[in-house]
Length: 326
Image (cartoon, rainbow, N blue to C red):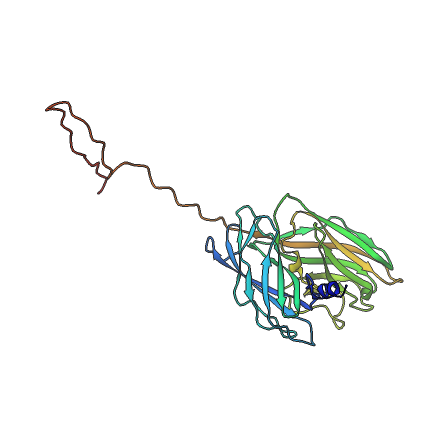
């Protein structure tokens, strides 16, 4: 019994619950069409920055193993050492991981990856994604599902739809335009955007106190600042959302998008009057065609020896066929 218990104690856990998380991902084209954009058909050099959230220790003996079960993605260089992971410091793999994308991968898709981080105290999983495609031109869309009443004091909230027609394409850039929301206590409201595949991003929440309305409010990742407790309603201008809109990169462009508004306190009512989206699709360039095969010819080759019938059956010597411009 003691031996069995010792064996169980010595067996390593498959994965430890270490406080290590994804920080950022950098991708470079190492082989492909040479335009520097990660695209179907390219081989990519991937740098994955991870960060320790454990303030009590420094992780040593660190290395990583990258993998992906995504159809069309092949990890051709999976292992790399890392420096020690110090609390709060983003740290990159020493050698880039290499990921080859098949030509059938959809442009703009974010390829899911799994990184197993090995340390001296155990292993843990860190999921991350490899983006593809470049930002295309923005197109503007307006919701026709307005006006819509916002339920008072209802945590479920209400969603106004915006349907983008089409059957394909992936998002690579996005801005949210709130043309007008009528409400007499903005501090009650929280706004979310939901994509056709169910991703949800919080735009703003609990700001504006007893101020009225949203008027021509734009949410963009490139804005200089967020709406804060000191920002005056009706928030006319361009602001960073609470959560990054880049979370929608790789989402389906076509389908039903939703602006969800939650009024979490009783006493004031309002309506969603106008809103829309500016959406940029992912763009990818084709891979160059393979070089054509060499032309079929017999120039420069020896012709067959021909047996003669005269002079006792003598044979003619081999004769070469010259190549043009030789």
